[in-house]
Image (cartoon, rainbow, N blue to C red; front, side, top):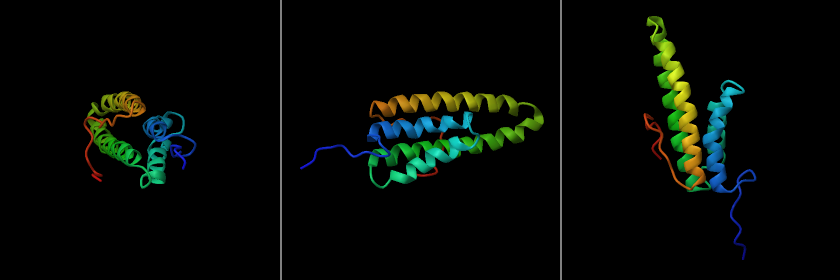
Length: 121
């Protein structure tokens, strides 16, 4: 009888959950990839592991919330203050992704502040 921990794309579940959070930072290298990659990582294994399901859910909820906030900032750019909003959103995304990744690496689930709960299960 094997006691090996399941692996997901060569990673244990905790590392894979960390990757889900960190992968959203890939948008700084290739625009848009930070939105697509976490969703792909989540969908690939969400039915095989409850932790992956939960970490992916909170990440996707944050990304969808970030999209809503970005649309609001875009509209507000016509009255100047939206540009500052984009800077704040960018900083929040970096900080939140790092905090969530560190928590995931410790085996904890961290729900992103200011995140709408679009996906509840």
